[in-house]
Image (tube, rainbow, N blue to C red; front, side):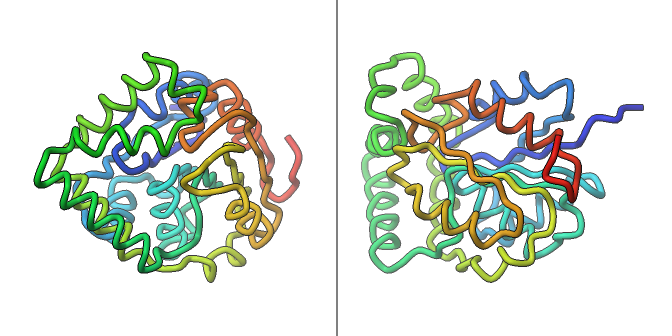
Length: 240
């Protein structure tokens, strides 16, 4: 038997379990970490149902970017099963027409010329400029994208383009909630996280300095420290 908290980690677009490798290790004393497969469904509702079907009855939940959108969909479908929630580098917004058009264009280009044609642009958008100079980090992000592959990329982009606005979900979230963002996140800027944190009762907002969109990879120690505090907080107290 174990008294560790079951913790389900949801990756973002073109990300795999490597996104959460540092946290899986750093949080192992507190949590039984499981990284969900986000490659098999073309709707957020489908992704959420698959996570719930494979999850224990209650669990802690952390999602980054697309994983955060899915986490909010899980809060829509089964909030009573989530004991605590972490939303990293994500938002509660739906895509507008401009964002949907960009997604369609990137998918068309990937279909025509191969996924490797669009991966570098995702990497450039996701990472802090200083981290683009780190060959090992760039290689990790690139390898993850290739592992996800073209067909899953198409499904993920379809799910993101059709996702609902989730601001209606936020005020009803009743579990300890961490909202975390890289200061220089260009894909989901800090203002979106400030709005989410303000709408979720008792949420903690953590801003990671000198960090882009992939905070768990870019600043693993800081992210793990924030998540350790979040996992250790006594429910309903706001205290460790």
